[in-house]
Length: 158
Image 1: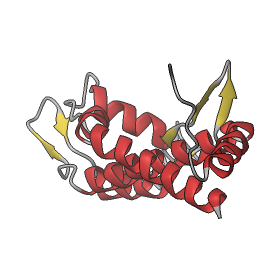
Image 2: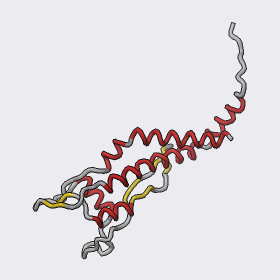
Image 3: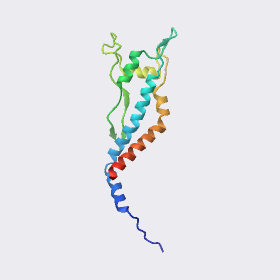
Image 4: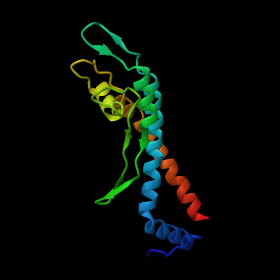
């Protein structure tokens, strides 16, 4: 016949788990921002390592210093979003750089520059930096998210 056993401290553990379940959205937000910070730091380093502008007469390759600085200044993490039980955020290059032309009197949009460098255009050879960075940092991003969750749970247990 089975015996009923008693686990010492089970009541406090159950209370902690119930309290965490009530704040699942907060925990998800903390984890998402922890991971986003890892990716943003990696992108910042990748932008710094983009090749300087060169040209072979047909297409140019790389970015100008104005474009590089615009990408660095515009890099940011958006406020998290909740939809259908999923919490996510975006990491993007916002705003404009200082390269002013008649077509772009505010300066070139940083998102356009990033997209052009990442995918290439008819006049710019592609130099992917976003996708390779995301792939390279996948494991460390998951680890950062787990660490953020662990810290959050430790704080709530106290």
